[in-house]
Length: 180
Image (cartoon, rainbow, N blue to C red; front, side, top):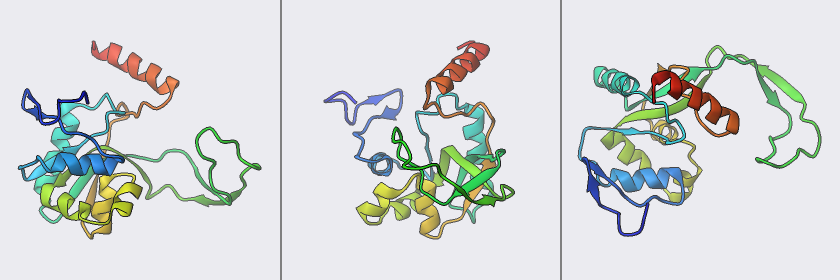
């Protein structure tokens, strides 16, 4: 965000400075939220639709026992657990990984955004030490760890994450189909 724009309001949107991690950025934004529900969305998923957000909000409102609902895609690939950890991005493995186990995909989902939370549940989940917040890969993880129930809502295939040149090309094709 450009300097001097923190707190600026445009079309009902308030800009706040981000943090060193995703969850720190969410915590900073959450300080400005005064609604019962709050949605968190990753800009790396540019093809999100208003319909998907509306479905998530409706599902959470229908389930007062739940703290959150996430968009997610059922895993369709066969999942293998390796004996060795994955190399970091760009690093070459010291040796070829070997399969330790084939994991059943029957109960596995790939978490996505948007994620919709009861604001109080998300605030409670973020009220933890900075190390846990920084280590979280999404806010639903923090809500789970704090005892909140997180629902899964099947996401449409077009809600893809753009992280590679191929992802970008696919997103461009999908946007062209939408007329955008």
